[in-house]
Image (cartoon, rainbow, N blue to C red; front, side, top):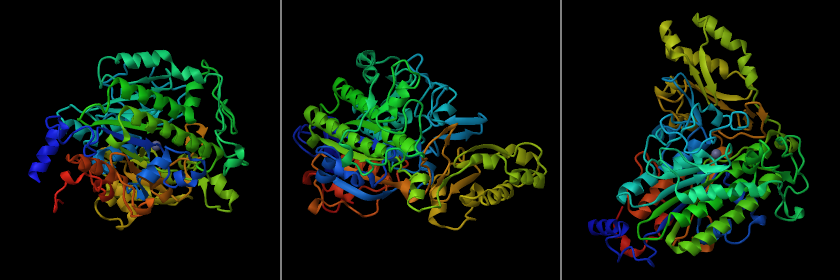
Length: 580
Ligand SMILES: [Zn+2]
């Protein structure tokens, strides 16, 4: 075993060409980690009637498709899921407990990857408060971004450590948090600025852009969409939702509308770049940038494995605006399938799929839109009205009970309620008692399934059920709030700071935790009969699987286990009997 490990080490740093030989499937030259933002686990098969060759079908038919993977943490949001994919751990370990949290030292809400120490390298690329529709992005008070808030190592970090920094590591996404999380602390990240229409980065990653990035941005590929529209990619009769495009619960985003075609508008329209992200164009731009990166950075060209993470964001935005069960989501998936096929063909030509280990998953799933469920006779579904909380006499009653004249609740951003701990201390009150009283009042609201006191949770004063474990896995003492609010299934807040959207994920319920996990390439053999693997796994297994496949140590906060079906593809020379 020692000899094998040493041989593998030497192979990956290029000192032992015999093991890292170009044609050996043993050591992949490229790890391609694809994240499809908000791709619920059932969606690729539900819309399979629109899939062509070489995209999802390549992954599902030539690779290994795990169709029973669920997150085990409670707050199924984008940065939480991405960081869990990157680290193989839960938010309690990696610290990304939500897209935003209340920083008790700064005394304000912070955006997960904002960092005042590292400014953007581009001017005028900061979040435009006037047009940004993502309320979590708007929470950022500085333009800088970095992975410094991620508290455990990522797979990509471990790859850098293992190879003495020789592995090339990149993360790309429309969303900053989709790129920064996956690139880890040792890689480089690029994301799309809706303000400037460019792919940008921050000074954390370097002082200047490589020439190829400047050239890509100067060519302004986004401008090619000016005056065009998102059109259906198949004949209308081919769609499940072909006859039900216009539904009043879909979001009527300015200038974009509820029905096909959805116009992008002219390039000088203030929402032009935003509209590109609200449909397949955002993924197409991401693909184009990733291709340029792969070629110009020379990924996968030598025996040292490189890492490229691509997070496709469009599925998430389309889901928020139109719901998972909509003509828009259906066509978006069909077009994503073509984007994946294009990517895989490109990588096959430049690196070779037999030398590329591909894994695809999602950061969370998606709920159904209450209006859609109502049409089907499923009535217990609604958007939760946060104004009801603000106007509630319950909070006033609480303050009276505890003799507090000042605001007791410092901040509320789903799922956490932050109490003013200093005030509670100053009044000589018992933190746990106040938390319990607040939780008890919140639990009375229609649509609230549970309001859980953090102190009670940490001290084991809550029943040891799956929901409590999920909230505990989400708990970080410096970032989590004092009460965790869980809505009933199919109930959620749909207010994006004034823009009413159709659906919002983030719950601990199965529709939000359920994601696909697919591995392919690099000599991976599909299971017998090309059937999906239905054993329950978690997305936390992915990073440890990648680590085990390369023979490197798992990330520091990983709790997942290597997936044996994937490791089965290791060439016999790299395994020995009895190896655990
Ligand atoms: Zn997401």
